[in-house]
Length: 171
Image (cartoon, rainbow, N blue to C red; front, side, top):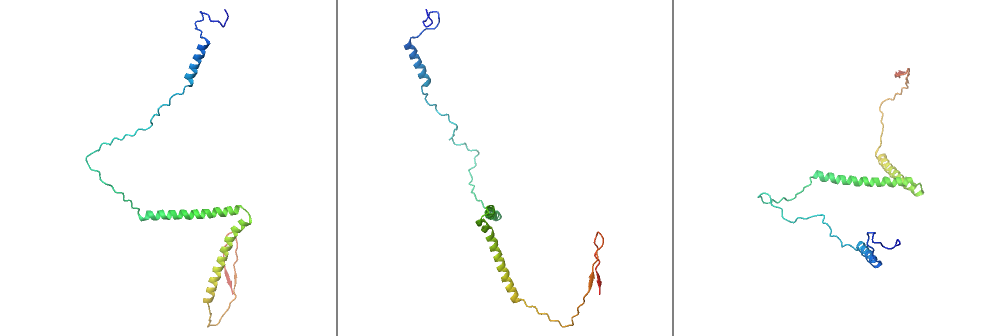
């Protein structure tokens, strides 16, 4: 008796090749058989029953009349206006810094043209004010008495660590 032949003392019943193939096919089909999809488990529940009334009073209408006080509306408008102004100023500063960062002819013009325009406006306003002031202002000094001119010498000696001022008038 060789190793491949079945013996009655093994304890295992031997199958023929056809039976072994049929059993292998059954095991493979059982493992790879698609399972039917499971029903999804609900994650919420909605109870549509009416809640019981509490007490015997009838419901009272509560109209919504929201009136904003004038100071609150003014504060809100001022805050929005201030925020918009600061956004504009911030954008201007950002653009100016961006112009300073890129040293090109365009950036130099970008920086100097507003300064030159401001200087031109200042000069124009100053010359207009001066011309108006020069045409209206005339001062005449009429002296009726004798004029006496004194030339005095003032000496101011300062001595010591802490200066003490002594003005002396010499005629």
